[in-house]
Each structure stands twice: as C-alpha cells, then as structure tokens.
Length: 530
Ligand SMILES: [Mg+2]
Image 1: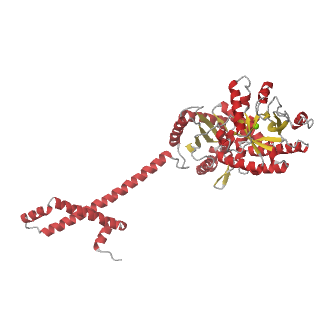
Image 2: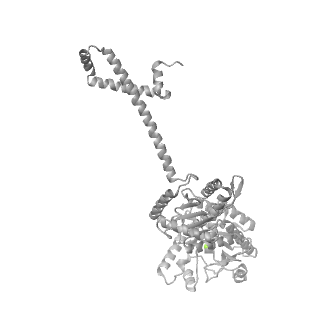
C-alpha cells in the first residue's frame, strides 16, 4: 500500500502503530498553538511586523511558523514517548529489585527479611486473637555431602525439590521461607493445640523419606526440626526464632532426622503421643483392646435393663492406658474410625449373645465420637455392624455428647434422622457439660439424655446441684425424653434419684464397668433378678 507524504513523515518520527494517536496529538497541539495565537492577537503583530519589514513576505513567515510549531509538536511528543518508556523501564527494575530483596531467587520462597516481617505480623495478630502460633526451624542434615559428592548445581536442585515437598504439606496461609543456605522456616498461625504441630512435624519428616532424583542420581536427606510456640516459648519473633534454632540443635544432637520442641514439657508430651499413636496402630491386631460393660438399671424395678460398653486398652508395651489419654490421640492420628468400628461390632455381638441367652430386651449403649459421626459412611457402618451381629436395631443405643453434635449441627441432624429411621436410638451423653443445646433438644432425634456425673457427685450436700438436676429431669420429661442419671456412687445419691422421675441409673454404686463373664455372674444369675 502506498503511503501519502504526511504518513511517511509521521512514520519516520513515530512508530506506525501509534500513527493515529500521533496525528491526534499533533492536531491538538496545533489547535492550541492557533488558539494561543488568536488569544494574544498574533496576527495583528504579524501584520505590523510585515509592514515594518517589507523585505519579508507574510506568507513565508506563516509557513515558517507552521513548520516550527509542527516540529515543536513532533519533538514534544517524541520526548513524551521516550519519557514514558523510561518510566516503565525503571518501574520494572524497581519491581525486580524488590523481589530480589524479599524472595529467594533459587526457590522463589520468602527470604529471611520477609519471613521475619511476616512472623511479626502473625504474632501481632495472635496477640489480638489470643491464639497460639508456632515456628519450625528446619535444617537439612547432610546437605554438605550432597554438595561435595554431586556439586553445587545438584545441591540447588535438591533445595528446590525439598522446598516443593515441604510446601505440599502446608495449609493455605502457612509460610515456608528459605532462611539461609539449607535452613528453612515454617510459620504457623492459629495452630490450636501442640498436637497439630506434632502431626505436621511428623508429616514433613515423612515426606522427605522418598529419595530425591537429582539428574541421574537418587539421594536421600534427613532434616532436624526445632519448634518454638507462641506465647509459651516467647512473645517476640527474634526470641522465638532463637528458641526454635536451639531446639533444632537439640534435634540434631539427639540423632538427627527428628524434631524437638523448645520446651521440655512439650517434648515429653509429643514423644509420649507418638509412642501411644504407634502402639495404638497395632492394638487391634494384637488383641490389646477389651470391652467392659457398666450396668444400667431401671430405677423402679432395680433390674438391669442394659449396659454401656466401655473400651479398655492394656498395651503390651505401655501397660494400662486410660481412654481419656488414648481416645483423643486416636482421633488426632485418624484411627478412631477403625477402633470405633471394632467397638461397635464387639458390643453388638456381645448384646446379641445375651439376647440369645434369653435377655432379649437388653439395650446396649455405645459411645460415638465426633469423628465417627462425621464420616461419610457412618450409617453404613452402623447398618453393617447390626447385620453382622444380627442384633435388632431397637436394642442399640448410640451415645453422643452435645459437643459432638454441635460441631456440625446440620450434618448431625441429617445422620440422626437416618439412624432413627434405621431403628437405632440416640442418647445425649454428659448432658449439661457441653454447649447449651436446649433449643436443639426438640430438633435432635434423641430419645434419652444422660445427666452428667458432675451434677450428681455433690448430691445431696450441694443444694444448687440438686436444683439443676431436678430442672434437667423436668425439662427432659416435659419433652418426653427418657433420663439416665450417671455417676451414682453412694446410697444417698441412689436414694435421691429414687425419689425423682428418672427412669434409669448408672454408676459405681450399682456396678463398675466389668468384663462380660463378671457381668453375667452378677446380673444374669437367674432370669428373675434380671
Ligand atoms: Mg457414655
């Protein structure tokens, strides 16, 4: 395509793509020039000038002025474009300098400066919300060997892969930073209990067990992790980092490829938890669990109407471990479902056995944790245990605490509804100690509440506990719910309960949790006493 002369001229002084914009800008500048000329009466001045200097032709002067203003516009615009390019270039340089100042160029992770900055921000936030935070100081155990054996490039590849694996274990919002050389820092906010930190430390140690592929070679590395917790181990970022560093050195001295808390107390707790968790994993297969049964009697007839199944663990390594110690750990490490399923099946089978002996209205109560209620296939598990044991659903009662249900009310409501359809009844356990769920009492598909032992234990001396217990009983009865009083340990407590409208009772005064053989010998001597 042929270009006109003005187009060719413009094309020389500006880029072709900017042509239209260039023309528009130059026209605008020209218009302004003419407007200024008119405003300050430049024409009059020119006529005067022409009269005084007859040697000049007025049209020549005008042409010269036109060319001059055109050149002025072009130069101004050219310089404007250059200025714009220069500003963009400098801004880019500034951005990459900022990135270099706060991010590690090898791994792309936040560097020491940004890490400290973020840690201070996390600590300020934690102070406001009264939540705990943690810092994990990580050092590779034999990184020098990798550098010596395979070269520094291989070392760099390893650090990159290592950081990617660690990142894969973190929650959104956790910070991983490369602090220096082969030192990394993990910052955790809102960590909850130290168990969550223990689990993460274990997870990151596990994730580097698989060898790293570096060029043609496979290599494994270990790491030592030191942990400091806010607010217990310090309030300031520098102090907590120093303490995490100290803990990391303890981990190195104690055999490497492990983690240590700064606080000795936390170390002990974490170590015990890991030991218990490891032993728990093999407890079912090594037959270390047994079910004990605590009798529940009818308050009026004093006959046994059922029992609560209670899990006991006699570990071959640790001896007798109480349920309030091992159940929370089983929940944390995710084996509560396997254990819970075992308990449910054993309890159903035991109950079926007693039904077969002729005690065929015996009700078995089994405790359920929030984790169990929360699992997708919960109803299927209950159904399958009933099927395997051939126990009719109406003789199974599942005990749930208020806290368990309140964790996820809508899904709990839906599951309780399905259980009711199945024919299984629900008891609200430890009533009065969890959330106040009185407004939910009607909505929940429960048939019984169990008054917590803490209300019964100071009866009859404590008048307030008597008032609370009576109020709970009357509330439950008005809602047509059955009531069991837990923790009956004295004759006086039994007498108090006998004078209320509670229908059943349970406690050491009636019978401790016991093995099935003892249960049978005490309560199933003959059908009349049952
Ligand atoms: Mg219970």
